[in-house]
Structures are given as structure tokens and as C-alpha cells.
Image 1: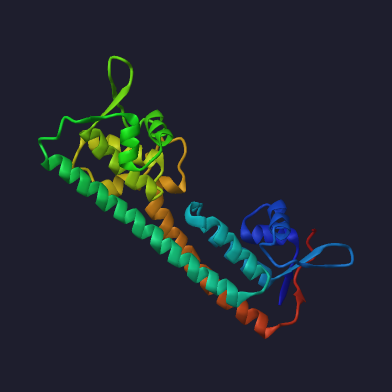
Image 2: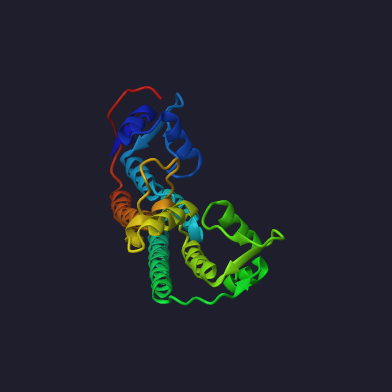
Amino acid sequence: MNTFRTNEVAKMIGIHVNTVRLYEECGLIPKPERQENGYRIFTDLHIEQFRLARKVLQTEILQNGLRKLAVCIVKTSAAGDYDKAEDLIGQYVERVNAEEEKANEAIKIARKILSGIEGNCEIEDKTYSRKEAADFLEVSIDTLRNWELNGLFTIKRRQNGYRVYTEADLQGLMIIRSLRCANYSLAAILRMLRALSSDPKANILEIIDTPELDDDIITACDRLLTSLKEAKDNALFAAQQIKKLKRMTSNKPTLTHQSDGTC
């Protein structure tokens, strides 16, 4: 089995040498042996574990404990418990699939509500207070306030300054609630609502998953469906890496030093 120094590993993986040491400190790779002079000795096993870690942690998926589970997969593999790591990958893929289903279902709900709005020319004139609207939507008043502050909707006010919600407002808020429950970001929802205001027949699925070029911040939730797909693809890559690591440890090859680079 080949051996490498810290700087060689950094070049091979495409990271800074301090990041190599950070991965060791965080338990994301097996602890390398050291020479008498203190230099770390990394092996092919470490290189493959680095590749696994980089791939699994590549996508910032935070919902439903997915990020925590991803870290657990990497640490479990680094500890050499490959069977458990494979089980965790299975759990991870199941959760990602569930999130994908929820995200797609939210889009279907949004389309259905929009279709109902378009087909219903006579919407009741009944109005609601903020508390009544929050109770109807099963969200908190603070949630409604947050959505309004972020520009997702604008509510009319009575002469006394109190907000008044109409039936049309509630239908629009039901779309926002469905998308937020599926973990779409506020930015993604706002992008979709703006597009629909200018073109009611716009492709919701495409718009909500495609950040604009001038967006200041692009997060995983701004392209949720794409990120979930990437997360699943990365997990499947990790499953192959686990199989490779299992084969490497079962073969137990001898170490062959390949370089005299500095630590």
C-alpha cells in the first residue's frame, strides 16, 4: 500500500494542508500513523476515505437531520465500521427520497391551488384577521409576519391599521406554506411568485429550482430538487467507496513509501 505525506494528500484531494489536519481532528478519516520525527503517514486507504468524505459532505442539505447523518456516515467509515456505514447510507438515501417526494408534492399542491384560483372567478369577500389567518393556515403569527417582511406577500390594512386577509390572500398563503413545509427557501418561493405574477402559466418546477444569476446567495434550498438529487448521487458514490474500502482492508497490503515530501 502506498504512503503519502500531508502536503501530497492535500495536492491529490485538492484541499489545503490545514484541511487535511482538520479532517483528522474531526474524525472524518482514520488517524494516520506517525514516523519518529512526527510526520504523518497517510495511505491509499486515507485517500479513498478523503474522497468519500468530500463527496458525502459536498451538498449542504440541512433538513430532516440529513447533514448530521452525512457526517455520521463519514465518521463511521473512518472508524472502520463499514457495515454500519452501509446501513447509514441506506437510511440517508431513504430520507432523501422522502424529501424529494415532499418537495414534488408541494409543487403539485401549488399547481392545484393556482388552478383553483384561475378557475374560480368569484372568490368570497370574507375577510380575516391575522390571528384567524394564522389559525386557518396552522402557522404562527410570527411566521406570517416573517413571510410578509421577506416580501412573499403584501396585505391590505383597515383604516385603523390592522391587517385584513382575504380569501385570495389565504389561497396564496397556502401555496407558500406548502412550499416552506417542503423546505423550499424563502428566496426560491419569492422567485416563483414574482415569475407567476408576470406569467401565470410559467413552469413552477423550473423556476423554483433555478436561482437567478444575480442572486446574492445561492443555497441548497434555493435549488432544492437539484440539491437532493446531488445528495442521492453522492450517497450512491459513497456506497461504492465503502465497498472499495472494505476490499482494501481485507487485503491488508504492505506499506510502500513513495515520497520524501515535507509534512
